Amino acid sequence: LAVCVDGWCVYTLPTGDGQSVQMDSIKSGFVGSQVELRCIFVNSNPPVKISQVTWQKFLNGTKQNVAIANPSLGVSVLPPFKERVTFKQAAVRHRTPSLEDTTIMFSNLRLSDEAAYICEYTTFPAGNRENMVNLTVFARPQTRMTLTTPTIVARPQKRKMTVATCLSANGKPQSVIKWDTRLKGEATFQETQNANGTVTVRSNYVVVPSRETHKQKLTCIVTYNNERITDSVVLNVQYEPEVKIEGFDGNWYLDRQDVSLTCNADANPPVTVYQWKVLNGSLPSTVEILNNSLIFKGAVTYELAGTYVCAATNGIGTRTGLVQVNVTEFPNNPPPGGPEIPQEQHNAGAVIGGAVGGVVLLAAAATLLFMFLRRRQRTFKGDYSTKKQVFGNGYSKAGGLPAHPPIPNNLQYPDDSDDEKKPAQIAVTGGFEASERDFDGDAEDLKRPYFTVDEGESRDYDERTLAFQYDPETEIADDMVSQTDGSVISKKEWYV
Image 1 (cartoon, rainbow, N blue to C red):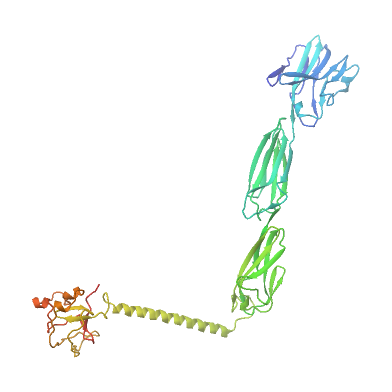
Image 2 (image 1 turned 120 degrees about the vertical axis):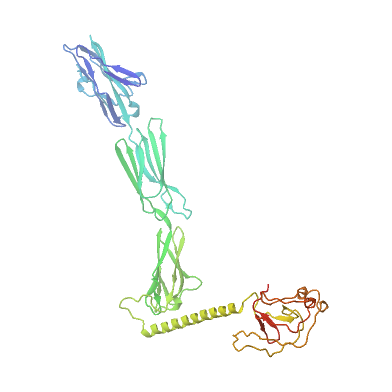
């Protein structure tokens, strides 16, 4: 049988005579506690003589005596174990001791006590017999949870901050920290290896303080070996007032009684000051301010309409809330069993609505009629007000010449002509000649004949005609209409 520690092994070989040292291979205990290290010698038959029993601490390849029991010299415990190590059996300390059971008691364990311990029997004539036990010392961590600051304030900037810290200090082995909460935050972790072999674990919980985080429970769970340690805190977050105005139900109508507005504010610490005002105006003369409420005395009037603002202040800051109050002539939804609106009022409203609708309909019809007539009047670019004067065989744009031969007013119309009368014949007396000398250079387009005859109609024009000689027998085309001032216009020609 071999027991090894840090590469060093102690072998217990069974002997033919049956002698052996019985020990536990592993023992453990917590710092400050007591542990028993068992050592029993199984003697042979006939028994051998036990000359001495020695307990040794074996660490890093070095042996250190802990306690010695000698039949002649008695019991001796060496420093630094003298005050903490004793032999369990009182018989070991007798004048004639019994050394078969030399179990020792280790009290007030220290981290430095962790090592391998050898129990060695010196016998005669069999020689030495020994065995070894590994002692592990655990350190229970010191666990605590604290708020980072007694007062957590929610700021408008909404910055993250550490609100709580969970600490598991000087644990061996190290602990594992977890958080249990409904908060939407995040945790950070840090491990520190201490010189004595213990580990300190620290975890911070980071969150954005707000009204929603107030009174939320935050639990730290520390798992050490198979042990579960929990600690909890409730966050106390201070924040500005959250203001809401209640009382306006959207149905404030004339002569309604007993209306009011209440400024409710959720704040920590509580609100100390409430202030009321009306945007772009002043509070009605019938209002009474009572704590955080506005009480409107008497019946509802149009004077009550407006935007009401409530400012609530606590030790952190000031926040406002507002409500738009509208006043109607009649209730929107009359309460069951309440006064009904008189039928005369219903009829008056119907008459007014019908009149307004009729006016709107007539205006729309007049607009459509005007647009229709306007489109009918315009049959080409320009309109019928654009006139053309007759010169020779052609026509010029209105205003092209200062004078022209007079045209008789007695035009002949067929009996079956339509609204736009077409002349059957125009009798022109006399003649008129024009030459290039009668026009200035700026009226260049007046020097060019314009023809408004129908397509396919052909006539022979001589040079005099092209020289703007007036033809007394000029015929008016079918698409020409005579005007009262002696001019004619074309219904087919388009002008740019």
